[in-house]
Image (cartoon, rainbow, N blue to C red):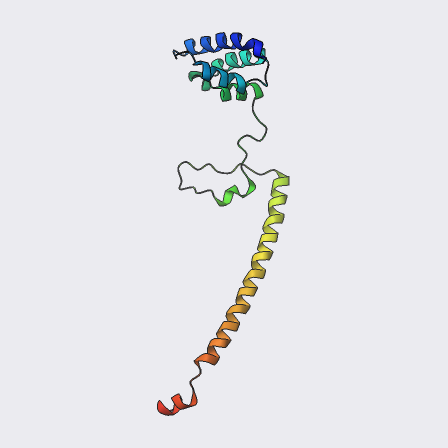
Length: 156
């Protein structure tokens, strides 16, 4: 929108607020919304208002600039997609948790490759820890051996 369309935008937003029974926007709030929507033509914004009001779910609530931007841009292709690792954090006992969406073949292949790399790293770490534990046990055996004078005193 252009600065010259500010008065038309004010009229549009006044009509929106009237239709929702809300007070008109203050000058500051109007300027903020106007600036948030400057990337779009006034006709796009006006059309988004009408489309928003037609939506039976979201149209029940007074729109914000973000609602209008979402209406103009439409559904985003990756909206609602979950990261491939999200299944690890899914807890079915959590009543607010949503299960991960099915992965695409590319995501699954990427996940499989990452899982194999991770499993190899974990196995290597496990071997290293095992070596350290054996070395510590060997050192403890040497330390735990009784001294000759202790054996004589204990009657051994």
